[in-house]
Image (tube, rainbow, N blue to C red; front, side, top):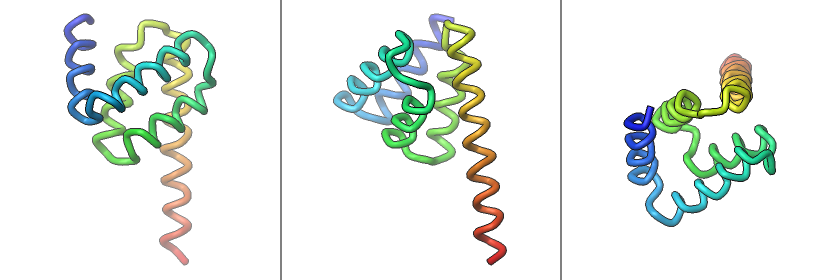
Length: 96
C-alpha cells in the first residue's frame, strides 16, 4: 500500500504543482477528519483537478488507497452518482 500511496502523491504533484498540492493536502486532511462533507470534498477535487479522464482516474486511484473504509465508500458513492448525473445530462443535451 505504501508504494501505491507514494506513486499517487508523485502523480498528483506532477498534475497540480507544489502550491495546489499543498492546498489539496489541506482539504483532504479536513475531509479525513470529518470537517468537510463528501460533497464539498468532491466539488473541491473537480474544481482543482478538472473534469477530465485523467482527473477521474486519479480520483479512483485515491479511493483505492484511502485507509478508512467508510470514507472510501462515501467517495465511491459520490463519484458514481456524479458520473451518472453527467452521463444523464449529456444524453438529454445531445438529443435536443
